[in-house]
Length: 391
Image (cartoon, helix red, strand yellow):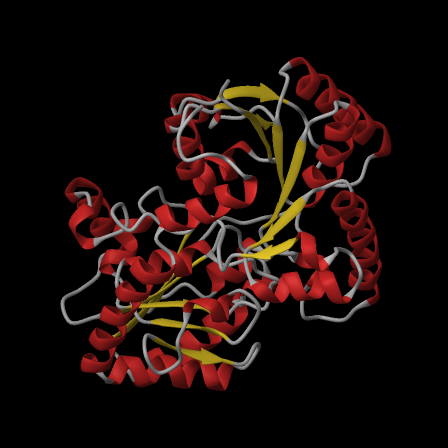
């Protein structure tokens, strides 16, 4: 009988956006896949992949009564669906899904840590210390109930081991657990109609060098302030340089960036777009991809997309980000929160057309060699012990 696998994540959009390749591969192997998320507009897309969606609500923040209801609902779902393996992704699912899986007597439980987020960030404040303590205890409980835990980068694996959150034998580091579809993200796959839409939206002029930063949400630790300040310096010295920031506001975040701050810096040299369905086409038109993050990243998807699209990368020598750059080969690494270093790195690439092209070619080679989604999925499913073909 084919395995019955449940994937638990507290965001239907994230499950579809980042893990659709994994779901498609499981379905292709004859696995019955249950996608367990809160209800949302991406449920239909998950079902179109061949997964059966089950709606379970998750509170974004701690809420004891709601959280107990979530665990009870998860337990009933896993038991009724006779799940053989459950994969819990991110902190709350790892804890709640771990408890529910054991109550439901699921045979195998795995977890996936796609970055540690705000509580484990670079800033050392009392609020972060309290949050980190709470999240660490949550992870410790969840990991005790989990057979294997995968990490998107080796730094997070080592941190969990060093702090006694997880036993070394249970921990696996992947350097991205989702990879990048190098066929979907390529110059050959660019959609002409979408490209026309993007061209009109950003109005890139001949001879301009477009430096692009894309984030899932606007928060300070993604390096937004540093990017804007570097943009002001570089564009003042180089009229060919034009900067594009893409990403929606996140008003509920403790690091929320005010709408007024971003709009105040808008100019003919700096443009902010709140959201786009055409990231591939934006990257195709871009000359440099930048992410000056000091957020506790897993491995930023936009950097993988930039690699696959053959773009030079400028990012921080920080957890997750550094995994995408071989310094001096396909990009440049800068210290976190260092506007001088960031501006200098961007300026170096703006001034050197040949260097940008060479870095871009190397980025594409690295994407194909290290982050091809097909190979990454094979490694993940080997950890899960899913057979290559359905029984």
